[in-house]
Amino acid sequence: MTGVRDAAQGELRLYVDGALVATKSACSLDATPTGNTVIGRAEFGGNQVDYLDGTVDQVHLFDRALTSTEVKALYDSGR
Image (cartoon, rainbow, N blue to C red):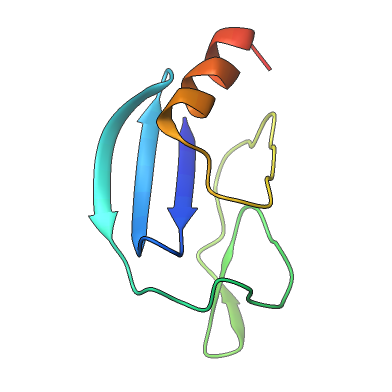
């Protein structure tokens, strides 16, 4: 599963096994936000919330929104 947040397009994209399965319009936020990247929980109103009840494996972060072709290539590579 791969999630892409494209701030420039104001869009969230979800991929499963390298294939696009869903898109959702999202607020077009500042393309250069500051703050920490946190995997496994969210933050709302300054409070840590929505903890993941499970396991996270093979997390990769990129400094830009990946294209569908790049997501598929990553999936195919097994990385």
